[in-house]
Image (cartoon, rainbow, N blue to C red; front, side, top):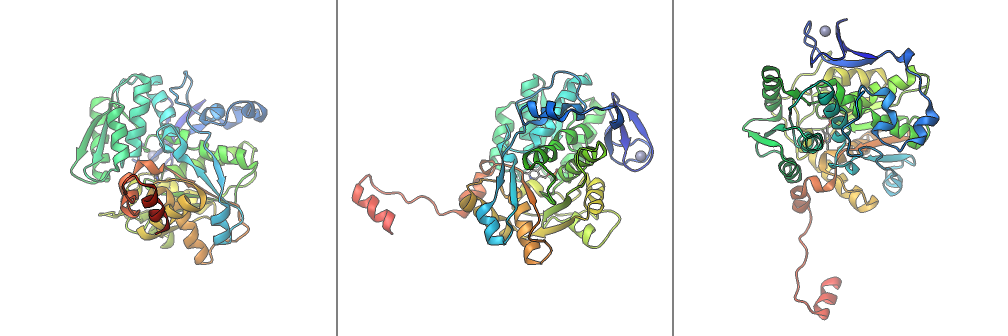
Length: 401
Ligand SMILES: *Cc1c(COP(=O)(O)O)cnc(C)c1O
Ligand SMILES: [Zn+2]
């Protein structure tokens, strides 16, 4: 049993009402379970495969879910990078290993399942790329049409390829992501289309399972959870999920929630450092990490609570620091991620340099999307292959040069 509760005022809404923000005060909603009526049998969880649906007692979906077997992603110990940084317990949760190549799939399996459960026959989102790739894929699986709005010229190639191939109606808006989101929100309200941006509280329910999987994989709670922050949905989701585990008595502590933004797009970092009650939107966000190129984070209110309530922090990193960490993860650890994903680990490098990290901490960085999402940024950083005639002596001299 659950209802939707406003995170700001006391208003609540029934589970089956299609509502994205509080009609009384305009703030965000969250799924609120009657946790004292939910019995969790951990050994039953452990008999199910590591995946989003292992945790179905803490998810809102009652029907057979629309699933592509999302979640169950690897948690890698970053041995060589950790040695370099002086952090023996540094881990990366590789969310690029999901069906569409990003953590968005965890939200979409729940969000698209809820669309069907609520009787909706069309879905839509605005996206910096990965949300559209994921929604297109899950709408295809569900057999319903999807509409996606993208900021023109600012979406990585692999993500557009996915949205197009899976059959979404793809519209490029001459404007930034924040504007595209306003437009799709308006379209969904006026035309009865189901909105699957992270303002949708059900999507975050799926994403919270990143935290559950980490607790199962580490057999305990890490000291710190580090996420790249765009719309701030994911950091909020992981915090909400772990908070529920604590209320249920399944864990005793919460990790320090730590958000990392690109320096050209860092309204949350600013709000944390200046102790502002709310974020001041960045009008012209800019960064090579297009997945976090967001100036007005929709879930800022939830994210600030997550960071402040757990003694966490936020930091920003330059595009150069992001790209350097993308290369380091690729070359030192064999982990291929897109630029936004490298931001979490780059943020840890920055915090270590600033002396803000205890070296004994057990730290989990979420790396959010796969290397192949953004091949153009990769190619631009690497020397092209050396082309030779098909001759063995030329091969040998090419290898020795
Ligand atoms: C969506 C996304 C983010 C940002 O997540 P938010 O929930 O918007 O903060 C970070 N990295 C990648 C690869 C993403 O696709
Ligand atoms: Zn309210």
